[in-house]
Image (cartoon, rainbow, N blue to C red):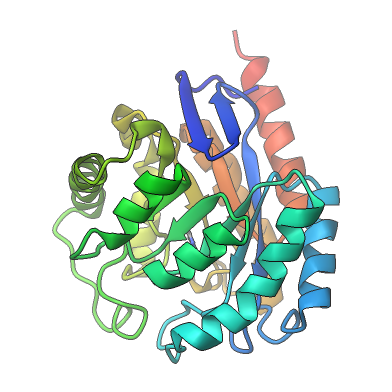
Length: 285
Ligand code: 9MG
């Protein structure tokens, strides 16, 4: 077991108490245009069946999204996003005891998803100006994933600039934790995610992954999502579906540095990589 510091991540009726084995969050994109699985799970039955398969493979959280966040993705209306995700979330919440997270930047979608039984809001737009999303999370007791992004999906990869990406992301988290608390959230509701690939060059992503240990001082669970992302291909020169070994290398090193939640399309492989990493870490004197 990876011995990270003692922490609780609370998401409505669910509670994850650390130290404990790393958590794998399986991705279910109910979108026509997500970069690796777009169009595969648009029909609610297919999305639910896929989620159930990911749970069988070891996912402990299912992340359901109805709007692609890949660079330059076309934004969708709230009505369309709701039409895509609510039937899936309703069915998953009715069937199982696996927490469902809603991947959305829209407070209205988060509200409806929480009404339908979701327990976590995965907010890739945590760089927000108003606090409606945070007040909603505070009122409902949901878990909240605060992800760092420079810009928006439409602009983020145009020319990301940082002086010191790890320091700037840490400062963003400190400010975000303050603003979440001011909106009424308990610290136990929040997990932090540096947002690999969101407004970052390949070099920024590598610098962030190399500096993950420095995020432990924030004393909140750290989530990492590298699954199938293009920087893996840039480093290794490999195409779309051939990036899994590169993602698993990032996963093992991130777990060693203290990350505890891993968002991935490739659940079985990620679970295996984590169990191996944890076994080696446990064998250290
Ligand atoms: C929706 N989405 C795509 N990539 C992601 C990542 O790295 N983290 C989180 N929290 N969400 C993501």
